[in-house]
Length: 59
Image (cartoon, rainbow, N blue to C red; front, side, top):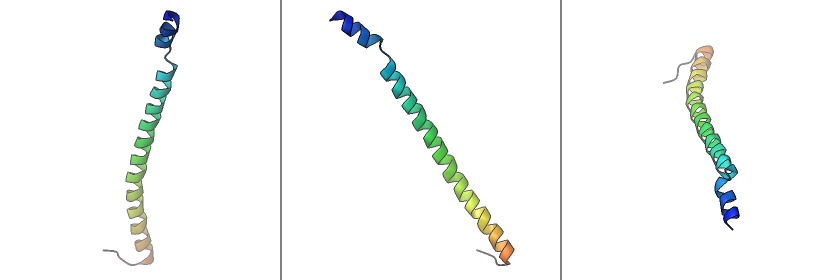
């Protein structure tokens, strides 16, 4: 029984998988934040370019 408990305590594969999952979640959140920020900026820029090319102005 002591041997089973000792092996369970030494086993870090589950902890490693959780750490990789947390890292992947953090990277995903960073990418989503960047895409949302750049998406709004790019949309405004393309709207400006479109209005300049068509000769109209937007408020």
